[in-house]
Length: 150
Image 1 (cartoon, one colour):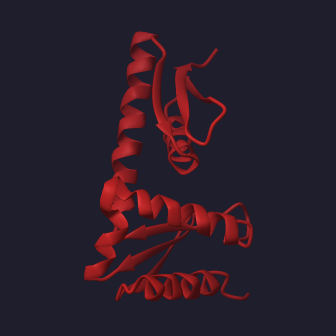
Image 2 (tube, one colour):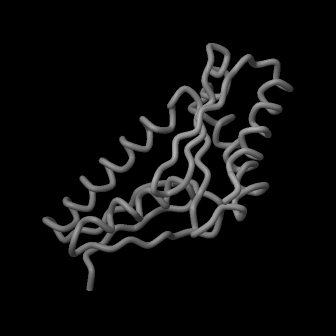
Image 3 (tube, rainbow, N blue to C red):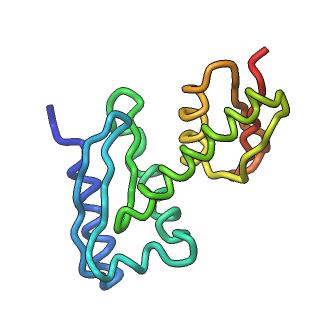
């Protein structure tokens, strides 16, 4: 089976070099797809401004390589494991809010979130029995509505 992540790694190496950033790209295979982490002292540039440059890079990689992976896998681009920590926080918050909805019966909303963040919330809330999620909005950033399952 060919390595589907190598072209993405090559792109990220060329991208960081074009920015003048000395960095390395590590690959971690996860159940949801490869997680590519850009490391090196200068990679901090990508996590400035609440990670906006990293979010933009994720979007470019999704557009260019998103459909090249098998079985609905997704590519996750990270720098200095910034998103990994944010992902854990968002997942924990989503589960906490889902439990609150389950106990109180009062719907809650989380967002606005980009598609990647919404996917994390949907997956996390799916682990809490008795509640459901729905994305609301018509823009790139939508709100996730968490409610009791009817």
